[in-house]
Image (cartoon, rainbow, N blue to C red):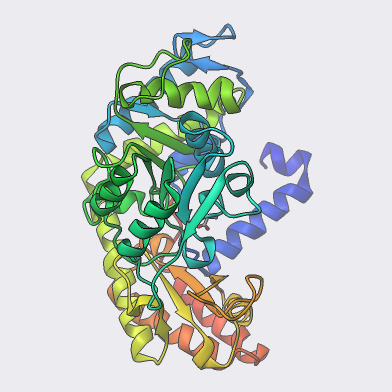
Length: 424
Ligand code: DSN
């Protein structure tokens, strides 16, 4: 019997139920994945007990000999994987990492530009109710009517508003992002360019998507999405060796120091050393050749799934996908995104409701759903399984109001899922 089971059965039981929910169903929220047991062991380790404010070799606490080594390994692996000279692996997650980027490069009241959440951006890319839209003068770009990024419109908006920083990257955009065009736009107004690659991190590593390193000024990636690590984030850049003890001028060469000072003392206290260790383990996994195969398979699976869904009469935003996710407009199916999410969940397929471009419905009950293939790919599913999954999605949506039908579907899916165990 585990210590947790003995000491706190309520929490233990809930964790077991969640484990069963994950393994008996299909996790298709594109920002989720199944981390390895090694990642989870590091994340659940004794390192959670250690304080270490500062950076390796310059801490404000004693006893940091080993956590220094852990953080250095994580930083070196991140630099190697993404081809940059500097990596900060301390941000607790994506939102604080983006906060650190703004804090490093612009001042409150300055104009920033990012993609609107309702068109596939993220809250921290300038949503009015988020800190990024409150403390900064946020200008939001959208997509064209077909859901594609419109670089000419972004250029025009930049000329009109002269942002000091453009935050690029997306959370619900199924197409390749042209970093070079965004660089040209940023340069035309003298803006910093940041890329939030959280969603497509593994696809950048595998070369399935263009690499923003060397094109943008700063890259942010969470570590728990396609990258398949623990919850956490990294900020990557190039420049002179960091000296977080001295306030630097805002120049490209000083980016490492600017970012490090923004994370601590600017924003955070102690790093989460257990997460840093787990990030190091995940980065070690991502440096293996098999990781590129996994990442490439995510795209193959996603493209197969999208083509099958189109065959079954679904409307996909942009008409398909280049990456790990797709946004399905359910308007022609007579149900809302919320109803779609609920029906699929009853059948054991976990997705999330999502707005579609120019959505006539409200964000809490939008027209679409967002789904993706990273977690299914981790379980070893390939194109043949995607065809089956597309059929189940079609059936669940067609019987969205029939609870008995959905429960039976769940039973079938559970039997199927047993052949694809979660990582051990
Ligand atoms: N919440 C994440 C997502 O689901 O895409 C973004 O941070």
